[in-house]
Length: 167
Image 1: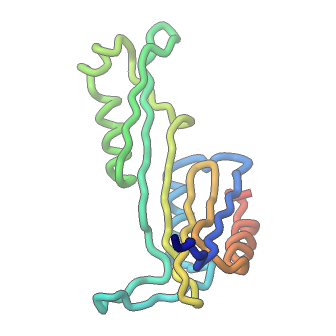
Image 2: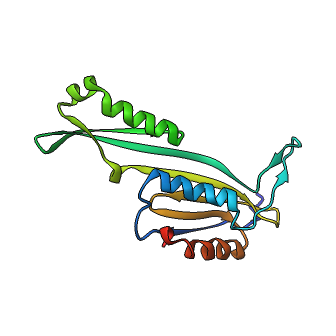
Image 3: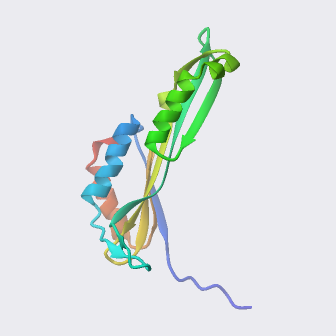
């Protein structure tokens, strides 16, 4: 039998944040700044279909709202609402908070659990070397994955060091 022969070395690295990103608005501002400012020096390219691709693009994202139902100071139920966009995230949370039928079924008053919510956005970055890699942001971490050259990690790490919210 033939052996598998390694062709590439894809790496990943993660930074745990000291303090979670506080709000979905500040999270989105951070993501949009990476896309708009391109702090990693990525380059655009043309895909196989001849379409231009920006240097940094949103690859995947989802946002999870949490609503607790409280009765006499005790949590009696929880609803988690995973949404594909921030707009849907906010709309779904508002709907759960305003849903009297759901509150009655749960036996409590609806309250938003901002601290329990999660945000996730993975960016695809196209390095000048031609390699694509990912920078994934959550409320609590920043992860770099599928990179080969350590200068990519160093570049992202240097930028992250300069962003107070990512300490």
